[in-house]
Length: 296
Image (tube, rainbow, N blue to C red):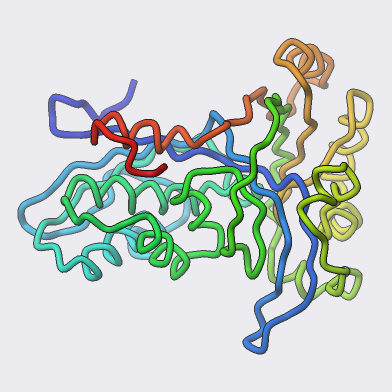
């Protein structure tokens, strides 16, 4: 039972998880950031963000979000403060987070939470910032934030912020969290990581010839628990790694097949069956509040 009651001024906003259906590194910028090509698939599953306005101008997190993350360092608080400064807003906000997305799994939980705060408070505070401006603010918080602000499946390039909308077929996913927090910096520093893949095109992904993740071989060698999950999932399909985290998934054409695969997994694995989204549930919620399709 949530403590964030609507009759106490709270509004609820979804923060969907994502998958990287493919991911390769094609080079590095002069500032050290790696250049990527990836496909973002949003999911009909994730965290829930609760917000309510404050008249005193304070930004406060109510309860915890990710265990061990201080209020000052939390992306949801940083997102609210960034928007408040950018839009010159006098009001403040209380922010609550109902976590479902495992931290460090590559499912985009922190970035999605931040994006939802930007979108929700833009509406609540009546800032009127357009999606492009909100996405630019999001990029200051993390490379994955813009895709959650934009709210559509996408082919992404650059550091992940150059987005081309992509229509993906309906699909269901079996997700597994091995419970391993993979340090991204260590992966990027690995000598085994391929950093110079030949640039691909969207047509390569559509044809099915581009489905790998550059981090997968590095992570599987580094983390026995993730390798063990891959071995288990290989009995029910073709497992893949999402992002640079430890999260694994298998794609299915329908819910029944995904649930049948889930039923075969050993007891103790943290796993879910979730539907791929055609469009972010965050945008559907925004349109309910606005009464219009602001994000076309």
